[in-house]
Length: 105
Image (cartoon, rainbow, N blue to C red; front, side, top):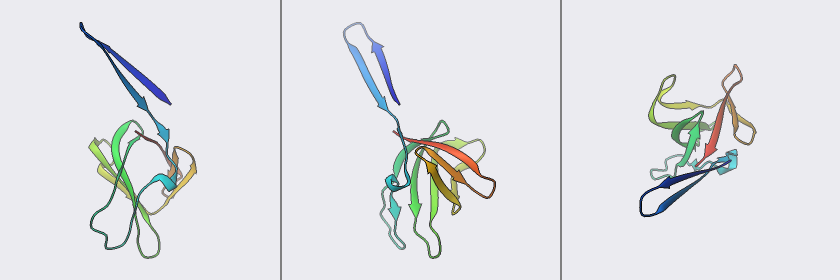
């Protein structure tokens, strides 16, 4: 999805182009065990701005979403080792097959 904002001022026109890309698991940074510095990816999760990464663990990796503003359901962050990207932009999680829509910004 491409979104174009146009702001008109008295002296010039300001264009802001926002491109949202449906996320795929391979796009998410993987944080290795004992790694202290790591990259996070800026995303929008169900309309909420956040950062995302996958934390490598013994047994199974977990996904971590850190919200930029407090999420009404999850608070400051969300994490689970039960996640699966069923299609671009859609992450199924947990044991009840809940879903999140995630786009890269």
